[in-house]
Length: 112
Image (cartoon, rainbow, N blue to C red; front, side, top):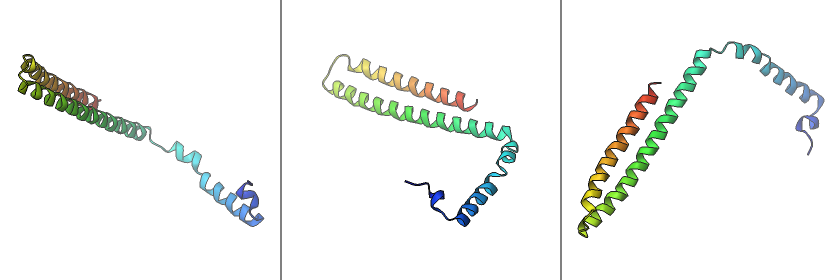
């Protein structure tokens, strides 16, 4: 397949090359005018939003796993297993500790 610029007429080539030159002529100066703090701020904001999304994902996963464990524990309580009450207590403790750690981690990393 031939290059599209090679298939153009001479006048069209001159117009395309002139337009490209006009568009890219100020590129060197444009990068020199970028404020470094703006780049750092946008990178920091992107990192914070990524961490927030990751923590939210982990919290949802923890909630779903805790829900499945709760259903299984309640089922075992109704079957009158001896260890079901102990499992229910561990379920509550694990859920509270897990959400507490994820929230603390999110708050700590968001403050960076």
